[in-house]
Length: 536
Image 1: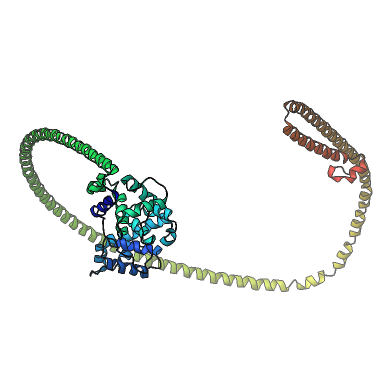
Image 2 (image 1 turned 30 degrees about the vertical axis):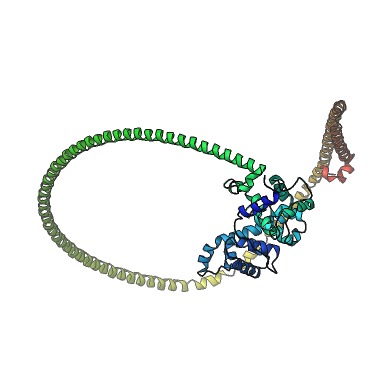
């Protein structure tokens, strides 16, 4: 292996850093803004990148607002120096806007904020965060660490491990010792280039597409790089061999597929020819069938035309017959109508004559009635005159007959006898006196009824008492048996429940006792308790 200083010189000359980075930090830019400037220099010139950062800073309230904004908004603030519509400029510089948004998002996720000055106070934690940017890469992180370290080499654990593997320094965990070992190897004024190159090597070492040790020959001079190169060559050979095998397999499979395709095409061609022949035969058969059907249709059409002609002739004859019959009917109808009119006229004349005759007869009857009424009036007048004359003659006889009326009044006196005859009614009153005796006789019967009711009530109450005692005894017996069973089973909960039931039974017994105490002991008590149905 060449000397360490020579290795570093070759490393600086042979390793090409992707993109361009600012040669110096712009005054007034924070570390985050310097990182944004480095990101934009991948797409724009340094001057346009600085102008774009200033435009973004003035266009948004803070960088967090820019982080959560859309790529179109970020693109509208980029100073690219190109002209065109807003849509055209966005399409042209879309990648730059997306990179700005991605950078801000990754910084926020790693540091939980966007203040890199505060985060870089602890270089150990800052190096862990800034050298692990998945999309932006470690080179930008190395540039930010270089600017945070005031233009000196940013030594951190990841960088020390890589330098130890490359053989630039001995094994150590002290950052101070690591800086002392690396600083003499780096030419003066090349600290920025060394920070970018070493982080570019770290970023591209594990690349699957183009690892850095395949491009830079100086890296293959150390054991670590040579081993990685040999492993990569072996892997590429294996992949090439596998690709050759896969290609052979693919070609063999393509040949088999081609043969299968040809067989299928031959089979399909044969099937197609068979189907065409069958279709031709079927078409010929259908043509013959069609010709026969057309001939049949033609004959059928001729037959139908002849039948229609016959039908038309028959219809014409039938119409002529109908017209003749209709004419005959019309003539007969006219004759019948004329006959009806004549008969109606005759009937009307006969009705008129009969009506005139009836009127004459009615007039004669009315005259006869008038004559009879006049005759009756004359006879009635004669009779009335005769009655008046006869009534005047007996008037004197009636005056003489009015005197014997006094006798009639005297004859009315025997009515007093009738009143006297009514006096036996007093006897009837006297005869009613035995009814009082009947009432007196009814009183013992009422007493008997009251006694019977009392006895019945006592019997009912006794029965109630007996039934209550029996029920109480049965319940108590059951409760005792249940109590014993419960004591044996040690079910104290159920025993308490039964005790509640016993309390309810005792309450019922007390109520029965109160009811029984209301029993009437004599007729007076029965009179005091009308609810029991006993009356005095």
